[in-house]
Image 1 (tube, rainbow, N blue to C red):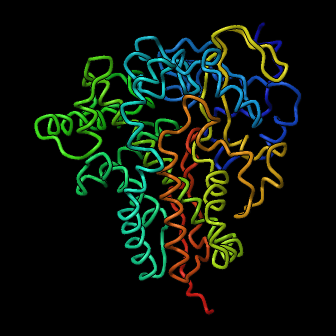
Image 2 (cartoon, rainbow, N blue to C red):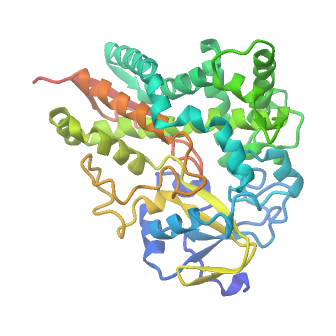
Amino acid sequence: MTATRRPTVDVDFSDPATYSEGIPHAAFADVRATEGLLWNPMPAAGSGGDEREGSEAGEGSDAGDDGFWAVTRHADIVSISRDTATFSSAAGHIQLYTIDDDALDARASMIDMDPPMHTRLRRLVSSAFTPKHVQGYLASIRTRAARLLDDYVEVGGGDWVEAVSKPLPIGVICDLMGVPESDHNYMIELTDHLVEGTSSRPLDPDAYGNTTELRLLPFNSPAAHGVNEYARHLGDKRRANPTDDLVSRLVHAEVDGEQLTDAEFARFFQLMIFAGNETTRSTMSHLGVAMAVFGQQFDRLRTDAALLDSATEEILRWASAIMYFRRTAMVDTEVAGTRIAKGDKVVMWYASANFDEEAFTDPQEFDVGRQTVPAHVAFGGGGAHFCLGASLARLEIKVLIEEYLARRVELVGPVGGLKRVSSNFVHGLERAEFTVQKLGR
């Protein structure tokens, strides 16, 4: 099977510019409507004229024949997600670009592993994220959400991202991890710069005192070095003086009779900080937009609190904070009638599947009463890699909606317009400005 014989997409889904106006719904709909799968070629490293060479094309990689199968339909993504034997997270990489074997070893965290290693590592932290356990964070989540909303309402609005959706999830995950309040803004800064590794922006390779080749760092970002250094220092403190937090649990935990190495712990820390912050932040940012644009839907919630759970699921679907994850075919196989060769990249576009007309009625509509079956794939399509923090994210979003409704206000705007994160991976907002209006009833 050669690349020239593969039916190809008309839009390059690997290009961050494709998402400059948000999810390219029309392009994804065209691909979903096409029989079988389509191949997405990627620019070869060193071909010239591509700003992604140092970040997205995979610096130092053998990307001459790079490309991937674009999986855009809901049912196909669910099927692939649950078959880790055929579609591997450990082989190749979970992002679009190809990286070298030594980089794979240097960067691998739990999310880059297959069972059984993934299963053993996941057990270390899974108890902290069960639905029952996360209810223990309810009071602190509500306190944080209430304070942030009170401040936002008091000043009459402004940048929702800066005022609400940035500080809330990082505060929650840092509380869980044991990161001091004084360092929360630093964690926001680091995760912001991690996301820049998936954009077309040039990165300063020496930032945060980094001396490691970018290809050996997650997201090809020097911010990963900053996270690792912070994790190392905090881990040393918790080894000497453990407290009741997840970092203390990790540095003293054992896997098959052995404790995590410094590198393994740092990768765990980075995964928790990124996944627990960036994805929920992006969803909350889009929640602000939904509140301003679909005010009548939130009026429904004011009169029917029973819709809160379905509303939470709807914003997760509609926001689609993580746009894709990649798998690599371990054997010759077939998806949607298309032959997939061993070693081919298979990229699951959650941002497409969450708007699949075959799965959701009127998917472009924001409907707080939408049926929750079938489930969206904002947390993945199920299986071994279903999002560990799904229960925590749901609780944070639900509480934020409740606290917003309790204040009898509505967002009006956007006034200053939206500024989107430049990325092919995170569907995020850098700015979303609204004014606050008191309800007259």
